[in-house]
Image (cartoon, rainbow, N blue to C red; front, side, top):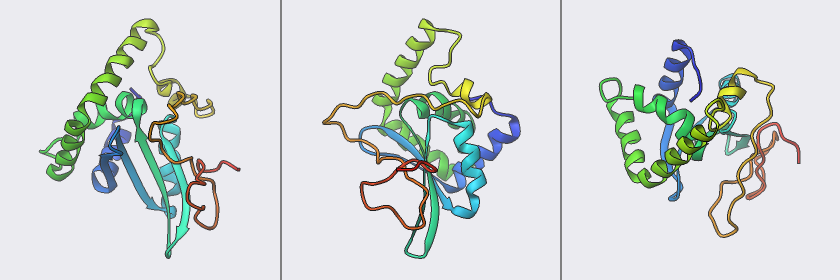
Length: 180
């Protein structure tokens, strides 16, 4: 799990409760945050704090300009869910807590499998974080951990987006700041 100050924990939970989306792609859960490009500093903080999550954009189309940050898979289960489950409770925000509960319920088998894998990784190497996020969050210049290979027949996320003035053509997305 990523280490955050009390302020950063509160900032993150407020941000996701107010602006985040809790759902999934039918195969795995995901938390998505989409906001105007004027909030780029927030997205860069998320990118440094959760290096195994993805930042897409900026996108510019239909008179809108925005970034999209996505937490899914092992990074979501290892780094973000423990924070959300502890802090996003009905007493603070009933609507957001219900959206989180529905996501946890719908994707319970995936989450259980990932938690078992994370536990096995921690047992095999107890001094290393399961996702690498704990180390990378303390060292902002650390490289991103490589993604595991995907099955050719498995649904997958879009390629990360590149910085551009216009929205990339469908299927041509790259991670923010990455050149083709």
